[in-house]
Image 1 (cartoon, protein in one colour):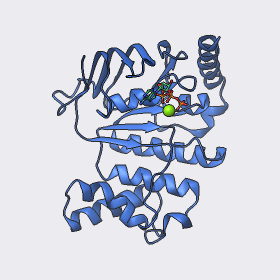
Image 2 (cartoon, helix red, strand yellow):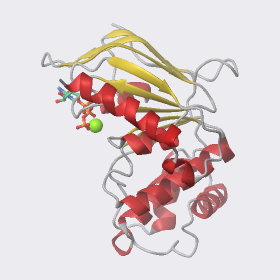
Image 3 (spheres, helix red, strand yellow):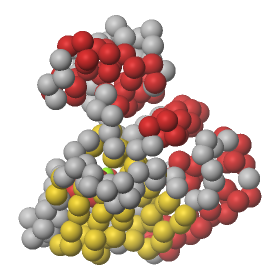
Image 4 (cartoon, protein in one colour):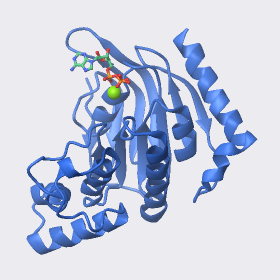
Length: 256
Ligand SMILES: Nc1ncnc2c1ncn2[C@@H]1O[C@H](COP(=O)(O)OP(=O)(O)OP(=O)(O)O)[C@@H](O)[C@H]1O
Ligand SMILES: [Mg+2]
């Protein structure tokens, strides 16, 4: 049995996370993943799409070292890993500023450095002016921004996203997609992103990985050639439409 290993980035070109023939069978016998090969380097944004229950969240938990794969190997070559979940998971009794400071606080960063990191992250995600707001006073999109800011305080090398914008309306989702791309350009982290939206996958990614139903296996890998920063108008081009079509077909075939 091999486990996810966490170590410092050893070489600038080595993948930040590297799955090699990874399989995952849970204790109750559920086979969630089989023969999965994925790698994410700095400056790459890899999105995984696949039917519900095909093992996408399992994949992210293995990358984060929260779960141990039962076959193959997964190496995560950094200890600066950011994780954004589908739910914003803010503490309801803490205001935005105190929520954003949480991970830095748990990591033992001193008060002044923590406040500075939080302030800069809050600015980056466009929440300046809402530092003292409580989570219940925020919209869904603002809560996700706060959740994003909380992970940004760690200055992650590898950023893992588990359907972070799935519950948002289309316009808010598109706006957050653009903000995430801007952060990606600025910070140059490696991204591993899960979504059910094929258009979101193509718009955000340098590469889209399509998985079959459970047990999740990779059925197609689609490189996305658009430059960054991306013009929102590319969504209306025929090239974008063709990529969305290819991913959608691969998904549909994997489902039948
Ligand atoms: N701790 C666990 N013990 C047993 N089975 C599990 C456990 N966690 C997940 N599973 C099973 O593994 C499979 C993959 O689950 P996972 O949550 O990774 O899927 P997913 O692709 O993220 O689904 P969704 O798109 O609905 O979020 C499912 O069949 C699920 O029931
Ligand atoms: Mg999931």
